[in-house]
Image (cartoon, rainbow, N blue to C red; front, side, top):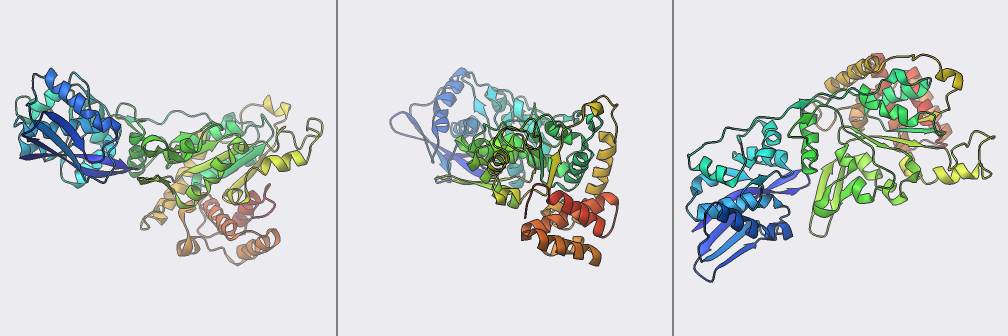
Length: 504
């Protein structure tokens, strides 16, 4: 007789169903696992055997074979321990086989039978709901999995509790979702002295999820401005929160099963590797671009990142997803993020200050900013010069709008875009609009089109640059509450496009 249990194998955020088959047959005593398991899965036989022994369950002196089907799908991770144990217990007639087959299980076993939390409980619960099965997981993963809400989640502390639950001796209550953590109180925009143009660019970028670059001398406030971006971003919608949390679940970043409504703000160091930024490594884990999905990826000292790492950003920025190709698998992760980059104008940082600049000016600036390729620079919608703040301004009290004031305007613009794109899958903000949809929502009036045509010809804008100007103009119009894109909107969008761009 062959008993069956079910679990999942992760390919990106997709959880593929795996059938765990167990057969106990006559032959020399052995315990083998087949079906393309990795080292962690192969070692499950020792953890399962010892955990059962701790429960006073002795394995028979027979041949035990566990098959993970489909056999050509790579199986990675320690979460296969629990389903292997379930199928074996069903094969030994300790658990009813028909009950075990109604469950999707995942969890790592300790040698004493304790169930250890594993990553990926949230996407596993989604897969279980699609299969009309319940989910069985460790107690530490239950609060996370229960957020799906479409299937029953049983969170057990130990393997013994699992046996007592499914044999009716001591049923376990369904798991409850974890806490919704409130967005942290960010730093306030009013703390920034001066830099009105940079603050305006930050507001536009937040409203339409446009990519933004700050260029300025050291200490001019580039990082300070970027650090205040979370304080003006609207909270994640329920759909976005679940979408983002699935990626964070695979990365093991969900804190005690709680889901945050705050948008991700990732700021990797410039020594980060390509695998850290794009994704990859062991089990093709998500990188920073995917962990920033629906949020912000802030890259300070942008030209200091390795050239190859910078160039790999080009495709994810355009498509909103990243494909990690490996010899035995191709894993896709979503990565619709807002890229905010900060850079000094040159290696010494004082290109515009003759008294402090190095002897290699202007070649110093050309070489330094030349590390950013033209195609990558072309993907920034807004480029802002951040000049140094005068010492006299630093003594002045905080002025301008607070983060709450700016956040209200950003939220209103986002609400307008949400209504605009409600019937268009894959589009949520103006940065997503393309093709016919872009023409429909952002066609400039005659006066604005004449200005845009003149600028495009004069500065040789690329087709990408042309359309990005229109998208930014549409966002500016949304912030103004305007129905159509007019000349002032195009003029402001163009002014942000041409700073330090030369062309494109």
